[in-house]
Structure formats: C-alpha cells, structure tokens
Length: 260
Image (tube, rainbow, N blue to C red; front, top):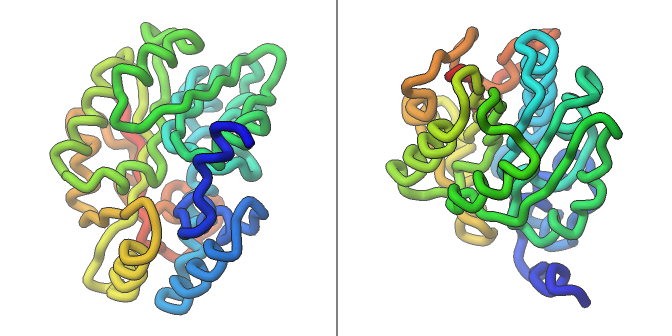
C-alpha cells in the first residue's frame, strides 16, 4: 500500500466521493453512497447542485479561454476527475493552455494521473496542498505558470471548508494579490437561504456524519470574495444561472467570475 492509499479513510463518508457519486462517477464507497442517499432524502435536489457546478466550471473556463484569452488556470480543490476537467475544456479551446490542479484529498491524489493527461502543446501539473497553504501553492504553481501574466484562479466549492469567515476572505485575497492584473477569480459556494431550509438540514446532517465539515454563507457573504474585483455579468447568481445555454432551475450553489 502506498502512502497516499494509506491516507484514504473508507469508514467515513467524504465530500469529494459523495460529489462523485451524485455526478454519476464510480470513485466512491458504500459509506459515501449511503450518506449521499440520506442527504438526497433530506434535500432531493442536492445531486443537481453537483451537476450544475460542473457545468458552470465548463462555461466559465470556455468563456475565459475563448473570449478573454486566458491561457493559465490555477484550480484549487479540484476534486475527483470527471468529464470536462479544467484542462480538457481549456486545452480544447487553446492547446497551449497551462493548468495546475491543487488538492489534498488522498483519493484525488491516487487519481492524479488521470488529471495529468493534457495536450502536448500545453502543460498540466498537480500539487498536493491545502487551500490554506497559500505560499506553498504559489511557489509550486510558479514552476508551471507565469504569475506575471494573467491567471484564472478556480475556487469551486472549496472555501466552504474554511469555517472562519475572515480567514477564508484573507486566503482568497492573498491568492488574488499574487496574480497579475487581468487575472480572474472563478468561485462557487453553497449558500444558506430562507427559501431553502432543506439545504440547511442536509448540511447539518453532513457536518454530523461526514468529513470535512462544510460552512454555508449567505449570498451577500459569498459576494465579499469578489471585493476589489470587477464582478462580471450576471453577477453572483445560482451557478445554473451563470450564462447558461438554456434556462435551468436555480440551485443553492452560487457562483461568479471577477476580473482583477
């Protein structure tokens, strides 16, 4: 057994594996499927969040690569490989695009090779690091990315794991401060909303039984991550409502794209 494999805990449900289960993946265990089904009973639409967030990623990356000329992506908290990962979408538009993935989940690390298959013209790299390790992330990412040129910072469903509000805002600010003008922040976050009490119940169940713990924030609190940036239209919205090709129902996963 490798060191990475020894870090995989199959006795407790894990958010990355449940997310994988909800999106139709196979990289999960019975404990994850059981928890995923229980959460879905509390909130039947929860599986749609995972799919909506994934589709938002594809639209945002495609927009940045096609319309804004972005050729560098720093994807932190990438999760398990699935269809249309960041490098696949970006390099489909621009084969020379460079992508650095960052995650500290051992199961994700065990599948790193699946993420590292990019185009010959581009570069795809992978870092084993926690979101809080800002200096380590930037130092290692600079070996693949030119931080003097614009970079798209991808933070999809990851700052929810930082419980303290001010710490989470500081992490995002430090990352964006290190990036060149013309860089972008792409961020999504589960929200708490009075119209969606079943979401709160599902998160409470997760925090009692699963790992790591999740922190919900209001839409206004999520919008603070974009302070000092130009928040592009349509602003901070349900990720299913961010420039969709066809209208789809809102979900309690909000997202936005901001320009430095």
